[in-house]
Structures are given as C-alpha cells and as structure tokens.
Image 1 (cartoon, rainbow, N blue to C red):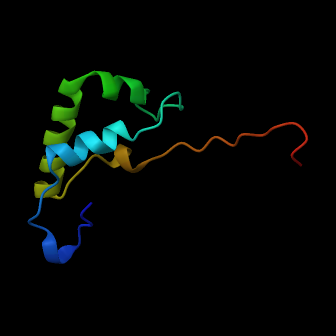
Image 2 (cartoon, helix red, strand yellow):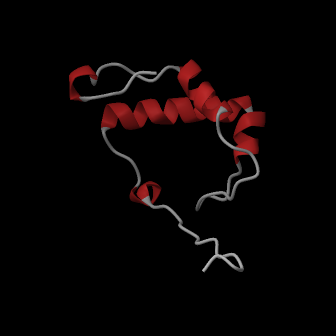
Length: 82
C-alpha cells in the first residue's frame, strides 16, 4: 500500500488498490449518510470502476463535496455497561 504525501502527489491510486479496499469492507455494518451498504459495493463491479474514476477526479482537482467529510457517530449503549 502506498501512503500519499506532497512529495508523491503525481502517483494515482490504481483500480486494483480500490478493489482491494472494497473487498476489505466489513459486511453487515451500518451504512453512512448515503445509506449504501458495503455488500452492494462488493457485488457490483461497475461501482468499483466508478469509485476509482471519482477518486482520480478528486485527486487531480483537489476538490470534493463538503458533505463527504461528514460522519455519523451513534453511541452503542448496552445494559449493564455503566
């Protein structure tokens, strides 16, 4: 895996790296604000290609939608864990 820094900014993420990351996503986890489950990414190869293309655009343009930097944190409170 390559870690990107200012020195190697011209290096781009390969399609193989994107598919590896998608395969490593955990199943049966709560989706983010987009409500897309990891299982969908794993089943649909077309999504992997589109995600790779989108990542390349973001990398070159240095721009992404502000909503994408937002996350959801839901505390998981269980009985007897106080």
